[in-house]
Length: 355
Ligand code: ADP
Image 1 (cartoon, rainbow, N blue to C red):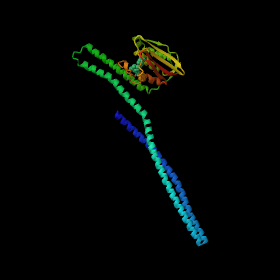
Image 2: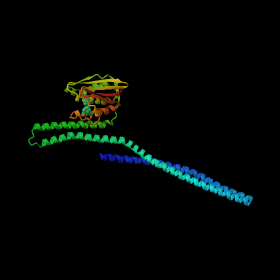
Image 3: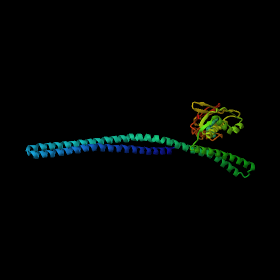
Image 4: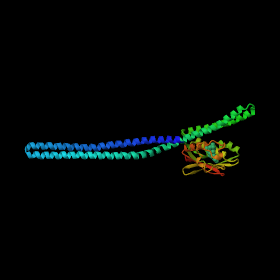
């Protein structure tokens, strides 16, 4: 934990410094150009005034030669010293302006450094937050996946070791062990299939066409009919012949997952309702059951990968079904939602744009 915080801090520090470097390069560059442009203009005025003063002196010199009078010589040196004085004053003023400008630019850059640090830090945090969240989700996913894979593997190994150590192993006992091992291997297969599907689904493009909700409901129902019969569960299908814009196969798969859950989490002899309707420009497909329901504290999490509500944590599933269903529906530009009351049942709804 501390290691991760340190890593995060180092990352945001590095990004803050990069942003600050960009801001400061821009500010210093702007200051240099501004200083150059302003003092360049001043230098130009100074040079032209210097030329004027020296030109004025030489003009007077010419008029002195023309008149040849001593008094003229006195007024010439007076004018010349006036101009030199003026020029020196001007230079002093220009120097003062230059120093003032430098001071102001230094204050401006210091201000830019301080505000730039704050802005850079906030920007860095903003940039890193979604990246960190994605990385955290990835890490959590890997750890959950390893945990889920490890459980059946440990059971497989323990069972095999105990059987192997038994010197008076009977055929019946060996068969029992092998049967148990096959069950664990099946679990592993289900988990890896789910993981593979989640991995592929993020990338595979879906071709969407008009699909009838009624046909989707029928196809999904046919897939789970044997499971339903085993538990004496009746599925009542009344979905309308409303067409939505979706990839047929993925919509059937998502509906099958919801039906499969409804069967898994309902008691023997109950009824599951597959219904549909339209709402504005959307088609809705409901899967309603009379099962155990979902606690309100679990509801916000059931679409997360590997999440299983506590009551069913025992051996019913791996917590991947609903995240696969949600992924499929969202890739069809749809939404999936749920309402549930503990002890009364749940209703899952798939909402898709009408064709
Ligand atoms: P799982 O393979 O465990 O069923 P899901 O992702 O399909 O995984 O479901 C996540 C959890 O949501 C389940 O473990 C279960 O607790 C709860 N759940 C899903 N559907 C229902 C339902 N129809 N009735 C009651 N609980 C449900």
